[in-house]
Length: 248
Image (tube, one colour):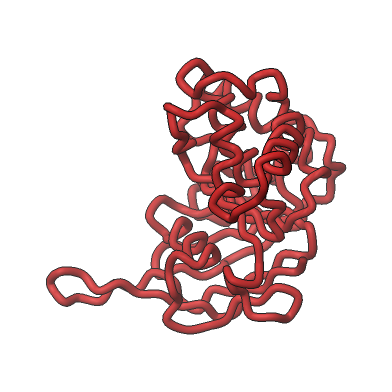
């Protein structure tokens, strides 16, 4: 589904009464089943954007539309993958993935079938009966991705999901995401501060300014979805994104 973010504004009221502008008329578009990376400096409001898209925060102005209709958690399915897995350690992997379906009243047999399907999708079909603490950090994050996918989201939000992992593990998780992303029937918004991660994973990159945040540059990734991180084209594009961020 086509996602449109149109002129979204947000400010927060601080304890001393000062208003802190965070988003200043933010506008960007993600085509249906596209993968957009939002890359920007720390503190620019990237997580705020996702929280507004998820319906956890209200914007002060602007509109968010899916296929021309105003985005609503009541009418649209939105999956959210946080920076850390946030798993329930006393529940099995399968039970963690089923959690949202249980809350929605989905019958037990259907819950298990759907959960096992997405665990297979993320390469964890042999770990359904394990507990989170027995898994590596990268595997725990894949459980979190499966939990978001099991609701069959129309929009999938990913908030720096690999940022807490060491680089070797993070690289493996990026490769895994590329492996199964074509099987995700969702429009993806992926937040990161890593320019190479942005160009490696996405179809398009939107570069964000410092706060109050706007989109300062947009790049389309002209590369097949089967990629190598050392592809000269991606390395050059990474440098271009870094320059757009003002980091060089």
